[in-house]
Image 1 (cartoon, one colour):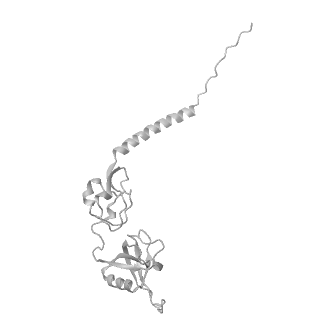
Image 2: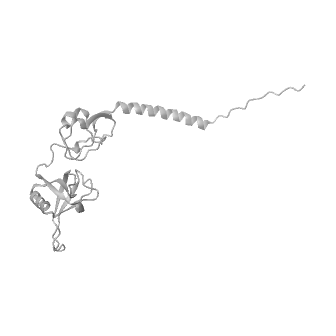
Image 3: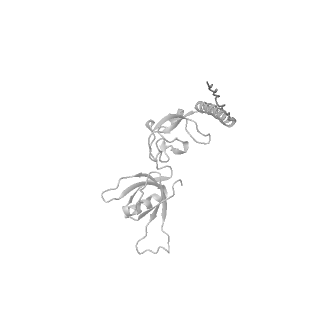
Length: 207
């Protein structure tokens, strides 16, 4: 009667490379855990914008919240403990909901500032940029010449202005835009707007 042979299980092959990878992954996981703990421990409560605030608007407590964050030291933020000093300040640029608030985005009073005046400028639809205007935009207000003027003899006069508010277009699609200009330019810009001799050039953003 034949005797069944003994089955010898195959010997497993050890793969040193895979073992080393596993050890490395465990070590990296430990380092990541330590980094997360340290990051959480070094978070600082700072002020964050909760809803969009247009340029020139007064900032209220409802516009702000305290959020613990870990940011690079070179990033300018405002500690949450300064909430009371920030409330009542004015947005020096359009503030976006969810963004960190920095000191450079604040100014003490609403426009016009010292040495400035606020002038309403009526812009017809054919002279309004297709993308419209927004508070905080820097524009050039151009004195449009008469139809018989020689443009090569004298370039048009221009005035730098900052947009504060933009009204909804009226029944004739004319948009009134409140701008700030140097006090010396205010009467001229107002006269140009009253006579309709106004064109607008938008400066690059971040100027």
